[in-house]
Image 1 (cartoon, rainbow, N blue to C red):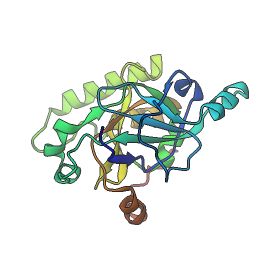
Image 2 (cartoon, rainbow, N blue to C red):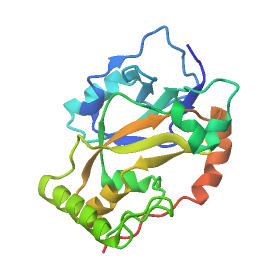
Image 3 (cartoon, rainbow, N blue to C red):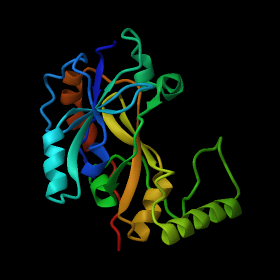
Length: 227
Protein backbone atom coordinates (compact mmCIF):
# COMPACT_ATOMS: atom_id res chain seq x y z
CA UNK A 1 0.00 0.00 0.00
CA UNK A 2 1.23 3.49 -0.84
CA UNK A 3 2.42 5.60 2.08
CA UNK A 4 2.24 8.88 0.17
CA UNK A 5 -0.23 10.91 2.20
CA UNK A 6 -2.17 14.03 1.41
CA UNK A 7 -3.73 16.21 4.09
CA UNK A 8 -6.67 18.55 3.68
CA UNK A 9 -5.48 22.13 3.92
CA UNK A 10 -8.58 22.94 5.98
CA UNK A 11 -10.50 21.65 8.96
CA UNK A 12 -14.11 20.97 7.92
CA UNK A 13 -16.94 21.43 10.41
CA UNK A 14 -19.06 18.35 9.84
CA UNK A 15 -22.16 16.85 11.39
CA UNK A 16 -20.75 14.17 13.75
CA UNK A 17 -23.60 11.85 12.76
CA UNK A 18 -22.01 11.66 9.31
CA UNK A 19 -18.75 10.39 10.82
CA UNK A 20 -20.11 8.01 13.43
CA UNK A 21 -21.07 5.18 10.99
CA UNK A 22 -17.57 5.01 9.50
CA UNK A 23 -15.57 1.89 10.33
CA UNK A 24 -12.27 2.39 12.13
CA UNK A 25 -9.20 2.46 9.92
CA UNK A 26 -7.47 -0.95 10.03
CA UNK A 27 -4.55 -1.06 12.45
CA UNK A 28 -2.31 -2.32 9.66
CA UNK A 29 -2.51 1.03 7.88
CA UNK A 30 0.22 3.60 8.00
CA UNK A 31 0.39 5.70 11.16
CA UNK A 32 0.06 9.46 10.72
CA UNK A 33 2.49 10.75 13.29
CA UNK A 34 2.39 14.46 12.47
CA UNK A 35 -1.40 14.82 12.31
CA UNK A 36 -2.58 16.02 15.71
CA UNK A 37 -6.22 16.83 14.97
CA UNK A 38 -8.83 15.26 17.22
CA UNK A 39 -10.91 13.75 14.41
CA UNK A 40 -9.31 12.41 11.23
CA UNK A 41 -11.00 10.62 8.32
CA UNK A 42 -8.95 8.57 5.86
CA UNK A 43 -9.84 8.28 2.17
CA UNK A 44 -8.55 5.63 -0.23
CA UNK A 45 -9.23 5.07 -3.89
CA UNK A 46 -12.05 2.53 -4.43
CA UNK A 47 -12.42 1.84 -0.69
CA UNK A 48 -14.84 3.08 1.96
CA UNK A 49 -13.87 6.13 4.01
CA UNK A 50 -12.67 5.14 7.47
CA UNK A 51 -12.18 6.87 10.80
CA UNK A 52 -8.51 7.11 11.64
CA UNK A 53 -8.91 8.98 14.90
CA UNK A 54 -11.60 10.48 17.12
CA UNK A 55 -14.29 7.92 17.92
CA UNK A 56 -14.68 9.14 21.51
CA UNK A 57 -14.81 12.78 20.42
CA UNK A 58 -17.62 11.95 17.99
CA UNK A 59 -19.58 9.99 20.59
CA UNK A 60 -19.33 12.89 23.05
CA UNK A 61 -20.41 15.39 20.40
CA UNK A 62 -23.51 13.35 19.56
CA UNK A 63 -24.40 12.88 23.24
CA UNK A 64 -24.06 16.64 23.77
CA UNK A 65 -26.08 17.47 20.62
CA UNK A 66 -23.14 19.30 19.07
CA UNK A 67 -24.17 20.18 15.52
CA UNK A 68 -20.75 20.26 13.84
CA UNK A 69 -17.21 19.27 14.79
CA UNK A 70 -13.84 19.98 13.10
CA UNK A 71 -12.56 17.13 10.95
CA UNK A 72 -9.30 16.69 9.05
CA UNK A 73 -9.30 14.58 5.89
CA UNK A 74 -6.26 12.51 4.96
CA UNK A 75 -5.93 10.50 1.76
CA UNK A 76 -3.61 7.96 0.22
CA UNK A 77 -2.31 9.44 -3.00
CA UNK A 78 -3.25 7.64 -6.20
CA UNK A 79 -0.25 9.12 -8.03
CA UNK A 80 2.91 7.12 -8.65
CA UNK A 81 5.64 8.22 -6.26
CA UNK A 82 7.85 9.52 -9.07
CA UNK A 83 5.13 11.44 -10.91
CA UNK A 84 4.39 14.93 -9.54
CA UNK A 85 3.27 16.60 -12.78
CA UNK A 86 -0.41 15.64 -12.33
CA UNK A 87 -0.41 17.65 -9.11
CA UNK A 88 -0.07 20.82 -11.14
CA UNK A 89 -1.89 20.03 -14.40
CA UNK A 90 -5.59 19.23 -14.47
CA UNK A 91 -5.66 17.30 -17.74
CA UNK A 92 -3.10 14.74 -16.67
CA UNK A 93 -4.47 14.63 -13.13
CA UNK A 94 -7.95 13.52 -14.16
CA UNK A 95 -7.17 9.79 -14.58
CA UNK A 96 -5.87 9.69 -11.01
CA UNK A 97 -8.71 11.59 -9.36
CA UNK A 98 -11.00 9.59 -7.10
CA UNK A 99 -14.01 10.33 -4.92
CA UNK A 100 -14.50 9.34 -1.30
CA UNK A 101 -17.31 6.96 -0.49
CA UNK A 102 -19.39 9.16 1.83
CA UNK A 103 -21.34 12.41 1.77
CA UNK A 104 -20.82 14.92 4.59
CA UNK A 105 -22.85 17.88 5.84
CA UNK A 106 -21.68 21.32 6.86
CA UNK A 107 -23.09 24.84 6.77
CA UNK A 108 -22.68 27.45 4.10
CA UNK A 109 -21.12 29.80 6.65
CA UNK A 110 -18.49 27.23 7.63
CA UNK A 111 -17.67 26.48 4.01
CA UNK A 112 -17.35 30.09 2.93
CA UNK A 113 -15.13 30.87 5.92
CA UNK A 114 -12.53 28.51 4.43
CA UNK A 115 -12.10 30.66 1.28
CA UNK A 116 -11.83 27.63 -1.00
CA UNK A 117 -14.12 28.79 -3.79
CA UNK A 118 -12.44 29.36 -7.15
CA UNK A 119 -15.11 31.83 -8.26
CA UNK A 120 -18.50 33.19 -7.30
CA UNK A 121 -21.61 32.55 -9.36
CA UNK A 122 -24.85 34.52 -9.51
CA UNK A 123 -27.67 35.22 -11.98
CA UNK A 124 -25.48 37.67 -13.92
CA UNK A 125 -22.50 35.36 -14.58
CA UNK A 126 -24.20 31.94 -14.38
CA UNK A 127 -22.73 29.31 -16.67
CA UNK A 128 -20.25 31.66 -18.31
CA UNK A 129 -17.38 29.20 -18.08
CA UNK A 130 -14.92 29.57 -20.95
CA UNK A 131 -14.67 30.29 -24.66
CA UNK A 132 -14.64 26.54 -25.33
CA UNK A 133 -17.82 25.90 -23.34
CA UNK A 134 -20.59 28.35 -24.19
CA UNK A 135 -24.37 28.30 -24.11
CA UNK A 136 -26.90 30.90 -25.15
CA UNK A 137 -28.02 33.65 -22.72
CA UNK A 138 -31.52 32.17 -22.74
CA UNK A 139 -30.22 28.72 -21.78
CA UNK A 140 -28.01 30.22 -19.06
CA UNK A 141 -30.99 31.99 -17.52
CA UNK A 142 -33.19 28.91 -17.78
CA UNK A 143 -30.65 26.63 -16.09
CA UNK A 144 -29.97 29.07 -13.28
CA UNK A 145 -33.65 29.76 -12.59
CA UNK A 146 -34.44 26.04 -12.62
CA UNK A 147 -31.66 25.28 -10.13
CA UNK A 148 -32.60 28.25 -7.96
CA UNK A 149 -36.27 27.25 -7.80
CA UNK A 150 -35.36 23.66 -6.91
CA UNK A 151 -33.13 24.76 -4.02
CA UNK A 152 -35.73 27.21 -2.72
CA UNK A 153 -38.53 24.65 -2.78
CA UNK A 154 -36.69 21.52 -1.64
CA UNK A 155 -33.56 22.76 0.11
CA UNK A 156 -30.19 21.22 -0.67
CA UNK A 157 -30.50 17.87 -2.43
CA UNK A 158 -28.02 15.41 -0.90
CA UNK A 159 -28.07 13.31 -4.06
CA UNK A 160 -26.24 16.19 -5.79
CA UNK A 161 -23.55 17.17 -3.28
CA UNK A 162 -20.89 19.78 -3.82
CA UNK A 163 -17.45 18.39 -4.63
CA UNK A 164 -14.39 19.59 -2.78
CA UNK A 165 -10.98 18.48 -4.02
CA UNK A 166 -8.24 18.11 -1.45
CA UNK A 167 -4.92 19.72 -2.35
CA UNK A 168 -6.28 20.77 -5.72
CA UNK A 169 -4.30 24.01 -5.98
CA UNK A 170 -0.58 23.36 -6.42
CA UNK A 171 -0.91 20.11 -4.47
CA UNK A 172 -1.53 22.16 -1.32
CA UNK A 173 -4.79 24.10 -1.12
CA UNK A 174 -8.25 22.52 -1.09
CA UNK A 175 -10.72 23.99 -3.60
CA UNK A 176 -14.36 23.60 -4.49
CA UNK A 177 -14.30 21.26 -7.48
CA UNK A 178 -17.96 21.46 -8.45
CA UNK A 179 -20.99 23.34 -7.16
CA UNK A 180 -20.23 27.07 -7.38
CA UNK A 181 -23.69 27.87 -8.73
CA UNK A 182 -25.37 26.02 -5.87
CA UNK A 183 -23.22 27.86 -3.34
CA UNK A 184 -24.23 31.19 -4.84
CA UNK A 185 -27.93 30.31 -4.80
CA UNK A 186 -27.73 29.00 -1.22
CA UNK A 187 -26.13 32.28 -0.15
CA UNK A 188 -28.80 34.27 -1.96
CA UNK A 189 -31.67 32.41 -0.31
CA UNK A 190 -30.13 31.72 3.11
CA UNK A 191 -29.97 27.95 2.67
CA UNK A 192 -27.49 26.96 5.36
CA UNK A 193 -27.15 23.17 5.54
CA UNK A 194 -25.31 21.77 2.53
CA UNK A 195 -23.84 18.42 1.52
CA UNK A 196 -20.48 17.69 -0.06
CA UNK A 197 -18.29 14.85 -1.21
CA UNK A 198 -14.49 14.69 -1.32
CA UNK A 199 -12.28 14.28 -4.38
CA UNK A 200 -8.53 13.68 -4.23
CA UNK A 201 -5.57 12.61 -6.33
CA UNK A 202 -2.16 13.67 -5.04
CA UNK A 203 -0.39 16.24 -2.90
CA UNK A 204 2.96 17.77 -2.18
CA UNK A 205 4.74 16.35 0.89
CA UNK A 206 3.13 17.54 4.10
CA UNK A 207 6.17 19.56 5.18
CA UNK A 208 6.01 21.56 1.94
CA UNK A 209 2.30 22.11 2.41
CA UNK A 210 2.98 23.72 5.78
CA UNK A 211 5.62 26.00 4.25
CA UNK A 212 3.70 27.20 1.20
CA UNK A 213 0.07 27.18 2.41
CA UNK A 214 0.29 30.62 4.09
CA UNK A 215 1.39 32.14 0.76
CA UNK A 216 -1.53 30.54 -1.10
CA UNK A 217 -3.93 31.77 1.57
CA UNK A 218 -2.83 35.35 0.88
CA UNK A 219 -4.34 35.04 -2.59
CA UNK A 220 -7.50 33.18 -1.63
CA UNK A 221 -10.67 34.75 -3.00
CA UNK A 222 -13.01 36.34 -0.50
CA UNK A 223 -16.72 35.51 -0.87
CA UNK A 224 -18.99 38.48 -1.60
CA UNK A 225 -20.86 39.97 1.32
CA UNK A 226 -24.54 39.19 1.41
CA UNK A 227 -26.91 42.12 1.79
